[in-house]
Image (cartoon, rainbow, N blue to C red):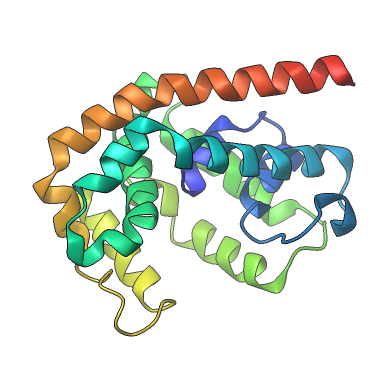
Length: 199
């Protein structure tokens, strides 16, 4: 799952949402990173979401829909495409409009005072300033997202024009997402409940 999905699945607090985004930027043992208990738990949740997602048969089916020329990057592409379906169908998943949710999360990211990796700080600034969550709603926004990502990958990575994978498999990928997201929500709820019992 990509940035929007991780924040959407996070407990609705500023530290938990920060941790949900830090998951891709904190390497090694989480306890060694020096964050408070809430951020640490959210980083662990991020990793658990990624593990659950990568092994789920529906997600594997989505990856198999990506053409052989881009199959190596299928995981990245499906994560981004699923964020598109979450954003474009947001009212089916959350009580608050996406605009309100985004403004709240962006404000939290601007105001946090925790030390974060430099790469994360740069990413978060762009996420807020360019309204990435809102951008995910449209196919054009996904094209922009992939163009931005292609600049960070090796020059020959076939990502820049990969929006065609979304366009050519749109209905099937959307149905995959709709089949997968209830399972993911249930797994996250179970993990959060188990963690609460342990504490």
